Length: 79
Image (cartoon, rainbow, N blue to C red; front, side, top):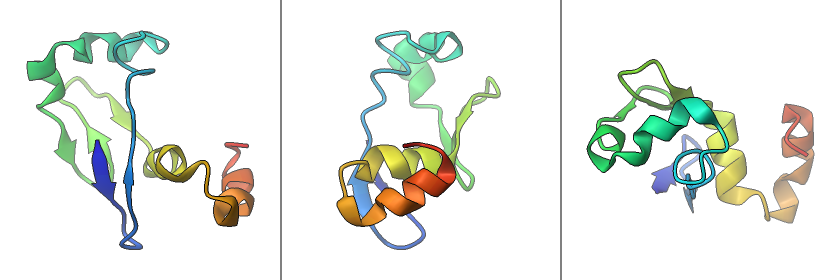
């Protein structure tokens, strides 16, 4: 999924670990593409079933290999 963040950076986030691979069980129901497509953007991605993903986590997933952001990711607890 291609996302644009509030700092105008654009990055791609692969949500397979959450959905298809079923590593996080509540997200498993989003394997149904029609349910997945029902997301809304309200500061972050959220679905009608009370699932959401923190914007910081989406940012981390989009730019986790960017060496200039590693301190920020460490502060957030993602590295």
